[in-house]
Length: 111
Length: 212
Image 1: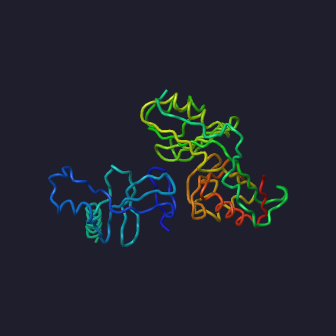
Image 2: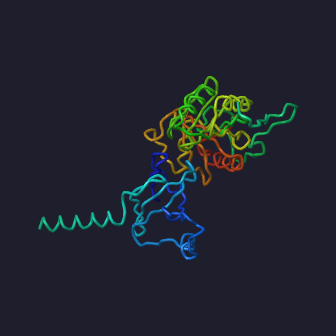
Image 3: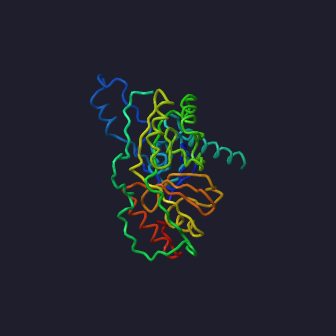
């Protein structure tokens, strides 16, 4: 079972209380009238399915019944952070890559 | 005062009111008295339950609620505001939602006081018929909850006075700790029979007394 931190309840809760609700940060096209069919189709139907870091929406269905965002590793299932809707993630693919390369160069310097 | 129509959900003529547990048939061996029972279950039927929605960061809204109810409005998950003398309690349900429980028959008057005190963007809903309150007490009440829910009921995480909403026996319930061995469960009408039977079944090994 995952132990998930709900940013609204300010507490860790059991996975059983939550429902996953798919990819987060999907922006609706600002001007739907002048959006191409392809772009509108991508907005409606096409979702990322990455191997590794993923930003998702989760719903605290048995608790506060509010949505929030989760940054999760789809390989290890590790939850790296949770944050409220409207906020931006602090852990991203870029930040993780920068961290990994910094660690690698530190190890190189130590040798 | 707003223009919203309110109505009294309590009939003024003689109609028999029945709790959601009126048809629950007890099939486990319950004790004849609370003496020696590990778990005691008592339904507080037909209380007034109201759902309040509004903006927690609006000082006018908070002041209005507190003047109408006479208890403070909790602004975070956990501590339940209550006045046991008047039988009024307010629990944080989500950042913009609260559950108000008042004595039987006082729901309409409470709703009208709230509507008189509030203005702007808010909502008050009477949900008295949608849920019922069970009191669970006794030395083994904690064990029954531990068997039924995944939440951490240790006093370190769940002190007296705290209230949460969580999963209980594959259904959901509002659970509040009112004393060291005393709990309140607020359960939905449609799950009341199922959860009541579940609690009886889970309590049977400790000796259970159902207060009438």
